[in-house]
Image 1 (cartoon, helix red, strand yellow):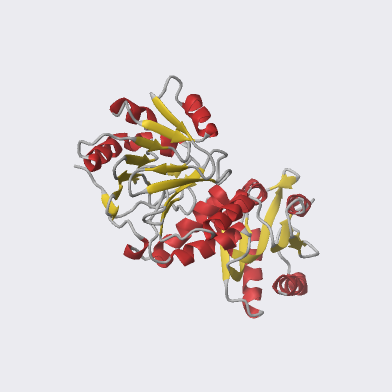
Image 2: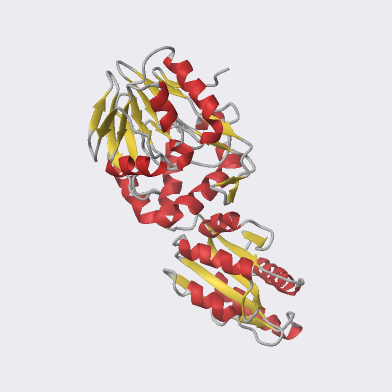
Amino acid sequence: MQCTRKVTDGIYWVGVNDRRLAKFENMFPIPRGVSYNSYVILDGKTALMDTADSSVAERFMENVAAVLDGRALDYLVVQHMEPDHCANIAAIIEKYPDVTVVGNAKTMQMIGQFYFGTKAKHTLLVKEGDKLPLGEHELTFVTAPMVHWPEVMVSYESKEKILFSADAFGTFGALNGALFDDEIFFDAIWMEDARRYYTNIVGKYGPQVQALLKKAAGIEIDMICPLHGPVWRSDLDLLLEKYDQWSRYEAEEDGVLLVYGSMYGNTENAVEVLAAEMVEQGMKNIKVYDASVTDCSYLIAEAFRYSRILVAAPTYNAGLFAPVEHFLNDMKALNLQNKKIALVENGSWAPMAGKHMKAIVETMKNMEIVEPVLTLKSAIQPAQTEDVKKLVEELLK
């Protein structure tokens, strides 16, 4: 049986939830699953906004057919060509052979690249500012390149004042019967997934997100319909504020993230000593993570969240302990900036981790490195108590 939700009179959610997938993009753990959102507009003409992942094709096609209820599908609007949203293009064309596929030049190119031999009878090439009248509803297309692929566009529906936002404003997490932000406890349950989704997937493209936010500021928006996660109709300001912070690489909270790697517990113990000293010096907002057991996507989300970071790692083969190196390289790749960072290295005979950590951090923008690097020789020593206090004092300034 179909499972759909009414968004407004004439617009329906026809997406599908996936709780079987272990890792989104085969990289990011999604213990709460994910939704693949798609929407049908019913008017004088009908339009389908994107499709869904191949793993949910049967349910998706059933939902579309149920909402159309025997009507023809006039338009398929392709806003984003990532396969979790475009995998059913060929199935839609086969089922509705007279459909017009709507997309920009890059979209049409990618359809041919992903689905060789898939060719719609009718296509409509659109660009920035073009409009598509459906009857009382009308779509205006707005390009959003590199949010987070080059072909991405969003669509503004002027009658209902809805922004169909592609991957922007999305989040991990399956929709448990609820569709709208006022049907869930977003801050308590969903915010961490929203942050982790943005920082790991879109985080590199802060300037491009800022450009989209500026375009969005010029139109009246009552609802945001993303391709993942809840539909926003109540507290849009919260979502827009978070996207503004994240895309400007501005910390949400004054606090310290401590990330460490430790082979036999000595570096871990040093981090415990440092965390306790931070509390002694008045810092209450502290998070501590072992890079060896915490998926890096969670570490990245926390790195965006907090104003200060401490990274501790042992030397390994004259280099840097691999899980910590992965974390720092991800920070760099995702354009993280505007942080104050302290470094702690360990090495029983030739400490080198600090040199390697500094080499990565120094390539990042607006990163203030606390000097000097704290060096451990196998384990933290009582004689280093003053060094610990000074390092914490400098980090917390």
